[in-house]
Length: 329
Image 1 (cartoon, one colour):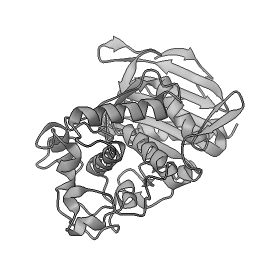
Image 2 (image 1 turned 180 degrees about the vertical axis):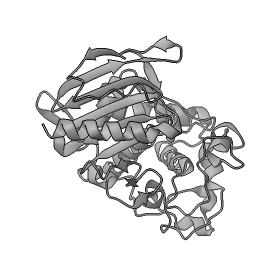
Image 3 (image 1 turned 90 degrees about the horizontal axis):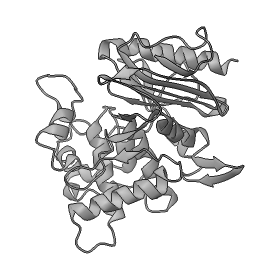
């Protein structure tokens, strides 16, 4: 990896051996301690290289819901306004159930060629035209609010609901109108205030943001998103604060609702929590994408790359060790 700024090998261990590490950034108390880039996709990476978020986008979706809560347009304890659920038991599923991945809806989150994968079918198969509608049409297989099941589908159901709110004043809503409203909302309410100038979000054919998977940005811009949660949901510039999210929204994200035995981590509301790193929030994505935030320690880390699933525990462990070493200085 080509270092831009290094804080010493004993503090920042190498992670390039665990698949491809395209970017690794460590910021503590406003100071960039380490920033390094490797090679990927047959080309060198650098500060201007954009990377796919994969499921780190789910944590961005959490921020969008928070903005609507702050606007008084969403009560997370209320049923999610999904039209196709009206008159069915699914009508009782709340925004909070979806945010916690406890909707009770059938879902298989499998990214390899297995016999059944709803996420692949949603993104590339039967659900490609309308991701949220595909996920919302699946049956209930557990009592609502009782069983945790990680699901990209529930995120895209949330995005359908957000899209409906953004288009609430439109008489005839088309996919083009929905996409324009969504991208404008993301730009003016999130990307521009955070100065995430490289960020590009993608929508599906129905015009809804694919909040489960598709934001492209530089490592530095993903770090700016992490800073939003580090700063309690506010943009801090020149000593002034502009609150973008509700005051309680950071703690809402990291209130543990489930323990994942597979990864030995915990889950909150569209953010993961590392028990080894107290008060952490972790946005994770397929193939080893991470944005790690510990607000009380003023730490933000970003790791982007391409790592096989079998190697991801090693990457996670090394990132945890970096966080612990840095915050114990």
